[in-house]
Image 1 (tube, rainbow, N blue to C red):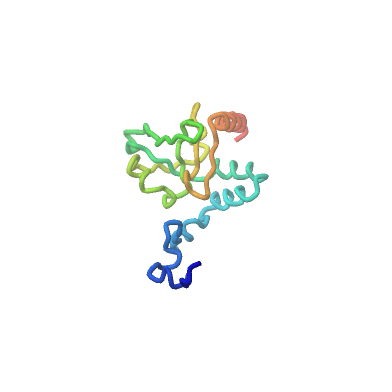
Image 2: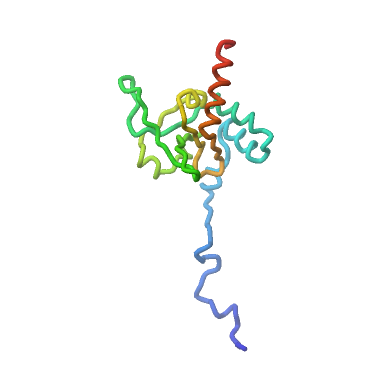
Length: 161
């Protein structure tokens, strides 16, 4: 049996400074807060799965960003969107709800941001899904077969618009 006082045994260590300690800065909390209508809908949908149809509807009309390896200009309209791979090994286009949700490591790989409407992303993709805000708390994924269904729905709606 030890007669050592446990509170004195580790006097030179600061509390909560172990390798597991996560220090959250006020900027992290501010960044996590939804800032756009679509982000508010997304947060609501994450809390209530029955709102997933509303989240998809909000995505279709929302302005979102994707990253391209080449600059998209009037002369060069061919974007090369950055592709990620999901845990199942499927290619996914990364889409972001705002510029501040884009990790800097992604910008290093594809430095040009392109702002488009969510429906434009759905129309442009074939045999590829997309992930909104990959790695962020406000994130969701639509696989390639889901994109195909959304594109069909868009085509059915178009004549009435």
